[in-house]
Image (cartoon, rainbow, N blue to C red; front, side, top):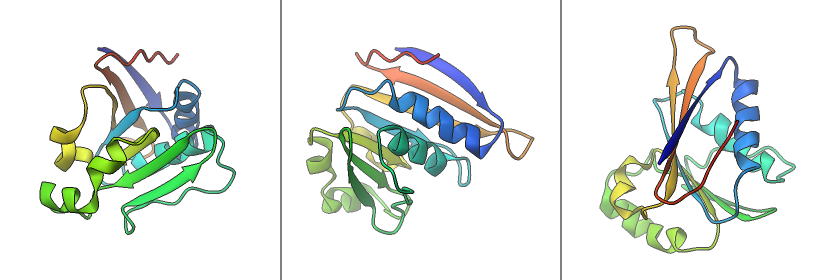
Length: 149
């Protein structure tokens, strides 16, 4: 397990950090995004998706739970914010998504942690006292070999 902390001073910088992370992906990762409401999870997700080649503007999947993109790799961008518990997550079919050969970007993954395999990229985004600044803590869990400079 290795960890890296990156500071972001703006939403634009958070977007660029997402693009930088995307450049290191190999095509079948699970990326879990943690952080309070408004911390920048969706902004980082947008950077990841754009960094993988999506030309449009990725939208949050909060109301549809999952949005799929087919670019350099197949991507499932998921948001579990509106789901109440593990049963609702299972009813949604999360196990099928987790077994797909794709990049899974999951916002608000807390209710599904027991279903995650032993390898994933955990990204925690924290607000600082300055409203625009963020601390982005990236940890690779398991045998994921991930290094960002």
